[in-house]
Image (cartoon, rainbow, N blue to C red; front, side):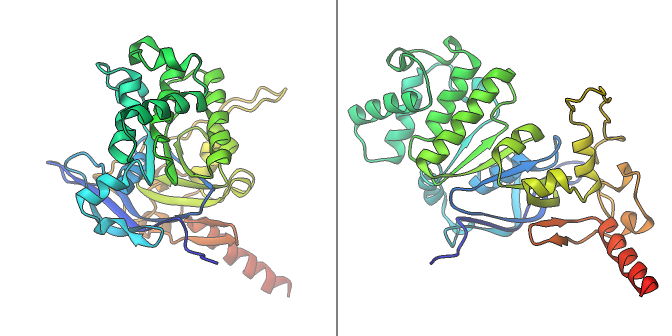
Amino acid sequence: MNDTPLLQVKNLSTSFPTEQGVVHAVNGISFNLDIGNTLGIVGESGSGKSVTAYSILRILTDPGRITGGEIYFKGENILNYSEKEMYDFRGKKISIIFQDPMTSLNPVYTVGNQITEAILLHTDRNKKEANERALNLLELVGVNDPQKRLKQYPHELSGGMRQRVMIAIALACEPDILIADEPTTALDVTIQAQILELMQELQKKLGMAIIMITHDLGVIAEMCNEIIVMYAGRICERGTADEIFYNPCHSYTKGLLRSLPKFTKDREKLIPISGTPIDLLNMPKGCAFAPRCKDAMQICLSELPKEIPINDFHLASCWMNVKKVYDEVKEGRKNG
């Protein structure tokens, strides 16, 4: 049996040199993704979620550069691929659904043209076969009257329809991994639920793995086997969905969960995370979240915390967990 993960990201770092200094958008992150699993990456704007995805696909905008680490797909380091090899790799092995379908779809080409283009570029199908495949894809993603939609332009479709077209393009070559970058941000709640349900159905049908990038913890709870919480370009906590939601061990994760609306009779007020997001040009020596953390200790400001195992399914980079272990040992000796 092959135990090699489908995707392995090891110590990935991505930076953007600017006139003011270097922005370390992704700073030494590592994770694995197995076949058929869904990995959620959650965090506020600027945490490095999307840059991580673009780094994996090597589609960073200038002046972004991968400055360290390795990315393995089925055991091969894709950072060693030539641009031609990456051209063949994108779409066929890993596809992405971008945040805003209105800006991602080309307004001057029909929906049919845009789907068949991906098929013709990455498969051996001829034009007739590509048109048939495009029609089947629109049916697969639940677009009504697909024959008519193929001849329409993006502006003639609703937001939900455009998002389904984006999913159809991403699935055109039956990729092993689908990256969904904020796939429901611009949609109303009803359409959001339909899109998430569609993605789950397609995953079961096609057996693909999914990386779900979002700031919405509700989406993460519904979709993901494993969750990574990012802040200021680093992973601050990771674990199974149950562990993250019911046993959060990093102050940032706890803050995110406290800011979620709760459907109880008490009508509790939302508790926002205090302070402002970190300036990536002036990163502190210690924990990046320390200036906003009410539990911060002196060590939090001066030393970067390492990942501490909470249990077999849960890791967190927080000095409070070290203190907790120390206090428990101290209490045990006292009672012993």
